[in-house]
Structures are given as C-alpha cells and as structure tokens.
Image (spheres, one colour):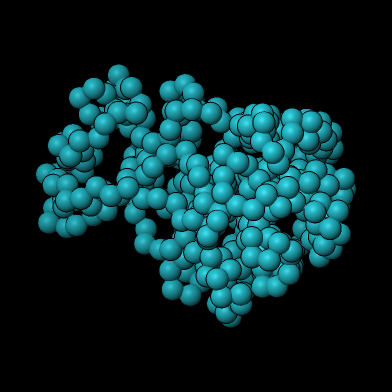
Amino acid sequence: MPTIERKQLERYLSTHYDASVEVLDITPLGDAKPGPGALKGYGYGTPLRIDFTVNGQEVSVVLSTVNPGGFGHQRMSDRAALLLWQYRGFNSLPRHVRALDVGGFTRGGPTSLAPVEELFLVTEFVEGTVYAEDLNRIRREGRLEELDLERAAALARYLAEIHAEKQDDPGMYERRTRELVGHNECLMGLTDSYPQDHPDVTPEMLIDIEKRCIDWRWRLKRFTHRLSRVHGDFHPFNLLFRDGTDFSVLDRSRGSYGEPADDLAGLSVNYLFWGLLHKKTFVPPFRTLWDAFFQIYLEAAGDDELLSTLPPYLTWRLLVLASPVWYPDYDSDVRRALLRLARNVLDAGVFDPYNVDRLLEEAR
C-alpha cells in the first residue's frame, strides 16, 4: 500500500477544502477485541484519524483504504469498486457516518482521481464506543443493565425502520442471494480462507455447508418481493454508541438493497457468540438480549417471512465467527459448536429463534 506523508495530506486536504490546511495528528483506529481469549485477528484495512486545522477550526476525518489480499481484494480494481460504492452508499442510509470524498494515491501523494495507484475514502469522524465493548462488559460482569436492553431495542427498531423501504427489482434480489453464496466476501470466499489442516474443521464439513447453501439460493428465488434497504454488515464493530441509545453506524457493505435477514443475522449471531464465549452455553444474559432483539424487530417490522429466509444468512455469519482467520484465539469447543450449528441451521427450514437450544445441543 502507498505510504501516507503529512505534507501530501496537507496538499490534498487544502485542495478539497479550498483553504490552507495544517495536519496536527494522524492516528490509526483499531478494532475492539471481543474479550479475553477471542481476539479479532483480521480486518480489511486500518483507517486513519486525521486531525487538522482549516479556516481556524479543528476538524477530524477518517481516511480508509482496503488491504490487498484475499476475499476478492487482490486487484486494485476490486478495492476501487468497494470504495467507489461506499462513497455513495454511506450517504443514503440514516445514522451512517458521512462520506466526504473518494480519491486516489499517486507516487506524489493523494489526489482526486488521476493516474492513481490505489484508492482511498474519506469520511467524517464520529465520536463513540463500538458496541462490542458493551458485550465485553456484559461478559466480564455476567449481568445486564437496563441500558443494554434499551440499546438492543434501539438497534432492532432501527433495522425495522430502514428495512421498511422496499424496491421492486427481482434481479437485484437474485444477485444479492447469488452473492451470499458465491461472493468473495461471503460464503465461498470465506470457506476458501479456512486452513486446509485446521484441527476443528475439515474440507468435507465446508463442502457439505456449501452444497446446502446452493439449495438455499434456489429456495430464496421465491422471495424477490422482499428486496429492502439494508446496511449489509450490521455487527458490533460497525456500531458506535454515545450516551444512552444515541448511535451511528459504520461501513455499510455490498449494496444498498438486499434481504433484511442479512442485517438480523449480522447482529444476532454476536449475542450467541459472546454467550458461548461466556459460558459455552446459550443462557442469560446474552440469551436475554437475543430474545429481546428478535421479539422487538419482528413486532416492529411485521415481517412474517423473515424466519423463512434467515438460515443461510445465519450460516454465513456463523462461519465468520468460527473462522480461524478472523478469530484465531478462543476455545476449540466454541469453534466446533459454531461450525456445526452453521450446518444444522440450514436444515431448520423456518428458523425459530426462541428454540435455538435444540440446534445448539445438536451442534455441540
């Protein structure tokens, strides 16, 4: 990746703001960790917080790139496509941090799109603490506060609100479900990233899951009327809370419209994951958050089809959490439970979130 020098940034920002800029500080922003023994070990890029003065005011922005490598990011054009979409996609979703510019690096530094070697995205900087830290605290203390239930409810209602916007485009729904199975960042890209010789997972296990997900892709073709506005990567590391239930969302991904189950799976599996990390079984306090989240969403959205589309999206998110690449360091019993549950969920047909214990017992 190109190096980023202070003077180059000052030239770029001065052009963007049409005023003289002095960069005060450049600070890497890192992911939170999901508690002891469960380090999130992989990310697509390290964003930089840039503090500077312009027109006598102090301003902070975030500059992001995408790391070359797996998950379909090998080519510069792959990474460019992601950042170009994010520039527009971020600004059309309520509560999302604003994208301010998309540009490229040349050998002389950053510039608006010229003969570029790599692209970057600039967003506003928003204060807040990632929601993962709430889950870490609950795990440490073993109990919920009233605010924890209020925040789960706020997130459920937010999803119901954004999902209420529909779009009539059957081909786009089919594309999104096709991408669920075959996209570099989704099921098959993820299974390709698993080590061939990991003690907790065999290629045969992953092959079986992939085949079942292909069946699900065809099953989902009858739900094209469900195409809805979505976030696309709604998990605890992309949610920033401030006081009370005031929050912002980060890093919308893969498309503006898709299946609402994608967002429900993205957050809910993390309640289950932190619960397994806590006690190796799914009981309160994390089970309480899971139940409340589903109940409030289903009531607010009035969506009686969601549980019929949820299984393959849960499987994908379970595979993320079970990944030795994304989460290399936690108990093998938890990893094996997540992997087996990822398969068992696909046999559920209509998923019952209030009876997940049976699938968990079979998966352990």
